[in-house]
Image 1 (tube, one colour):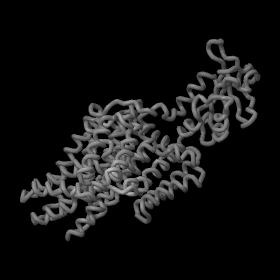
Image 2 (cartoon, one colour; image 1 turned 135 degrees about the horizontal axis):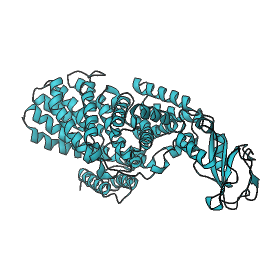
Image 3 (cartoon, one colour; image 1 turned 60 degrees about the vertical axis):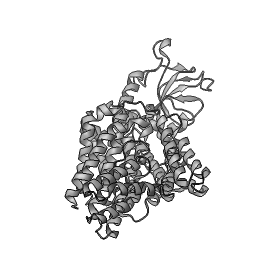
Image 4 (cartoon, helix red, strand yellow; image 1 turned 90 degrees about the horizontal axis):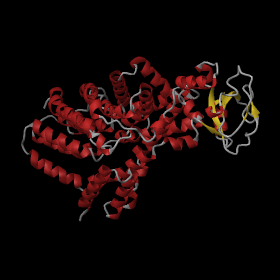
Length: 531
């Protein structure tokens, strides 16, 4: 077989493996890259080029920025603001999440918007008692619609604008895309409101239990358990927190007598209360108001208070077992330590992305580096922050997209399309081109798809003696409608693990949205940009 045929075979095999869900996503992606090399479609450097692709590196840096916003309590604060304004009602939450995602994606990027809002939406869902899987796919789809609001929303917009100018037309204005983008954002929001609850699955994500606890409810639990007479602000603040630990088996603390008001030897943490299991009767010491003491045994609980850094070190001691990790508690405190620095770094990154002063990947790397140098994150935190499954998956699929173009596989499809279109009316030609774009966009990047189809669209417009503007704007709309699979866009992949989604969960809501996008591209776009 020639290279084009092998590319089709590898594409089909990858899709089958993705759909089956029997092979880990990262393994499938690595298998794609190795298969492209083994069949001679690409050289080894080309097959592994995705791991050095700027888009992949940029996505990894966005996970770091997202972790900074989450760990410093920025996302918790934003979640509180959303909950306070929208309550716990599903409808109002969906509207706020969709509009916020669309607005952010219009000025930074789809990937950046979703990476920044992902932890916010999970926090909001947990606080409102809603399974995150009911909100995360709408987050990704609303961000894709929001990318059509400005020229900077997605590289596809820039591609079609430059193609329109090169074809003898004119470049699209910065906000001209909003003429079609704004109605699509509204339509996306309304469809999610109307059918999202029925079409979206109720999944429990693998790491759902890692969501940060609400400081107010956690403080109430501790007060009830230990009779500690302190308000929430005293228990959890920007600088200090409270940690519940259990005495570990064979701990050197076993046999020591402690009481409320004492301090720990290493970290000078104040002991607020100690207690023993319910099977041994009432607690010997319950808060500072009680003058009792307790001779520690393995499994006894101790409540300590102090600076967050000291609590981190104490929790890492082999002498005790932390009931809840201090960092999990700290990130739930709104606008905690490092929040201002995180917001400044985020603002500078958004400015660099909006103005285009540096490439996006450079803006992301500068932001990640600044967060480490300013002490907001440590190096181990940055490594843990990156969703390596997502990064490997995208890196492995990038070479397949390149092979689809370089081997002529895309050209073969284009020849068939040209034969079908012939001298048809502009609307039929537009329909065929948009359907082709939507189909290809489910498996390869929308940028690559539009790069392949754009020259065909220009040629068709010239053959029909029609304006190129409606054809290229319609391609932008069709390219954004990548809703059927998790591999269609990076943002679909980003929400997959946090939402606990399966490969087949996307098309149920994605299909009606694609129909709306298709009708918009074929019927509405020519009304604004006539043939």
